[in-house]
Image (cartoon, rainbow over all chains, first blue to last red; front, side, top):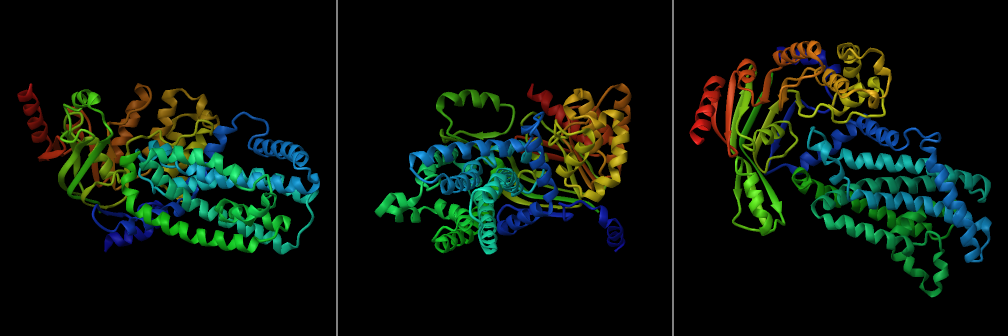
Length: 290
Length: 252
């Protein structure tokens, strides 16, 4: 009882992670451990923030523009592709630039999740093999870094919306933000799922790398699926298209965003189930695999 | 109130896809340490810990004794909650600090002040805790004006001093050291040793793996002898060290 009292007084100075009792049984309760892991990672959002800032600091150290290099690079790419492909496709620059601009930047966000998720654990083994840490903190760090990267690049989207594209009803902007939220949510779970698979099967990471280059050309990022004529429906089978469309569609008033939201929402519900299942089953093996 | 309990804990490392040609060299490099099963040539199993059952309570200062590869570090990693064992159960009551790698997480481009926060967050300290200990950490490190500068401008000794000051600023119930922590020049080293001894004294349970018997006798009251992943003795530290020395001599 005396101990309880002492705990009361010291409560504000207790640490974030340890519930003071740590129990682990190699043969049961893995679902509970996985749940606790994710809860602890959320509780330590300050550490996630710190990790993301460290990564940014390291990358843009000593530059004048800092992380705004992301904005500058995105501006150049979008303008260059916009000018050239508007000519190639013989389309109006005014309508093509927003399409390719928002498309490219959003694609970068989506493919970033897929590409980098496979190495989420392999690349952070030096951290979690030295210090006790919830393992879902690393997918969270990736999600934070990609979202921050997207933020700097999305300034180009803001520019496009102000200067080039036609104004949309306010609801459309809200829809685009909701679409973005779905991308981030799904991306986080995909990072857990692919991170675990990538840690166990190193070929998986190589395969994903090869596949995503291909997927970029397969997805209507800089071309319009209408150009496929009678085969336009093929894009509908491409989940990447739907995730792209729930951000770009509302901003440009493209048709069919209802279908895309439906498909994306279904994936956004399945991804956490699959990811949590795999995480609960193999979380305790990650330290052995990496 | 601190408590550490391990029941039938086992850890096995699986070395996959090993080719026959590399088997000989692998066997040679592990010959001093764990138990290696090479019955299957494509999957080599190393039993780093086998059926380890230990129980410790407040006041226990435990020294882990054993050859290289006997399982000391694996056991420390299991105790720290870094490595989930493949068999058995663990129960740890009390706040635990595993100071296995005290420079981990430090940001070369952030200032000394910022690094206090960064490193303490890695250790799982709350913001209030860090704020409460902040001045003490800065003062103890004796880095003065340097704390304003980015870490990459520090000498390696200064870096260790900062890392040491942070790592030893938060008082755990259970403290785990792989080796004795030491930092800086002669002057600072004395001060650091006093601080570390203070930290050990306030902790409920203390674990250390070191190859210095003298230091272990001084700091520990209990000894655990590990041989090929098994606990072959646990009890008084003097007895454990004597036993280990005898066996080492016999083996030679």
